[in-house]
Amino acid sequence: MAQGDLIIHINGWPGVGKLAIARELARLLDARLLDNHTIINPAEALFERRDPLYRSLRKALRMTILAHAAQMKPGVLILTDALSDDAFDSALFEDYRELAKNRGARLVAVVLDCAPEINAERLVAAGRAERRKLTDPAVLASLRARHRLLKAPGLPLVELDVGALAPAEAAALLARFCRELLESELQPPESAPQPGEPRP
Image (cartoon, rainbow, N blue to C red; front, side, top):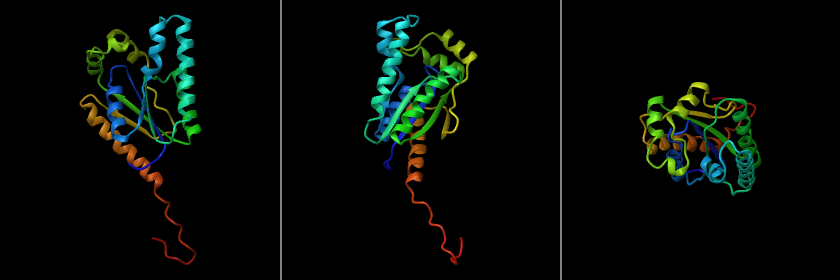
């Protein structure tokens, strides 16, 4: 693919398939992948979520990781998250805008969704509990009822219903969009006609 510095933020409800799709996309784009559980799991391993030390460790890890990500070599970085459109999560997303600014990178927002019943089925898939992922359908239903997924304004946005798509299919669609975005930015702008030249 064309070379460029791009950050792809994949947002979606727990269990929608973010990580499986992100792994496929990373393979297609030869990208680095930083999924949200890489940041969350060390805090989960040590503290209960209601423990103040859980939140402070999670915040410290997140800020340290993003500070180091800003210093990576140019390339494609994929992030995954489950962010709603409330004030707290919206503020968290601003850290990704800052990361893109620090890297001089383009930031793309991807929002994945599917029907609630499909989401609930995927939530209890084998292996999720072992990776400390949410597996309680009641919690998921409450999240979906009370919140909407964050769709960051002012960015290229891809919304994709992945209910009927395999991870490889969804990743292929996203890869095509990202390649087109990078290639369009690398195209030299059309030269302006000189005085006296006919305009197309």
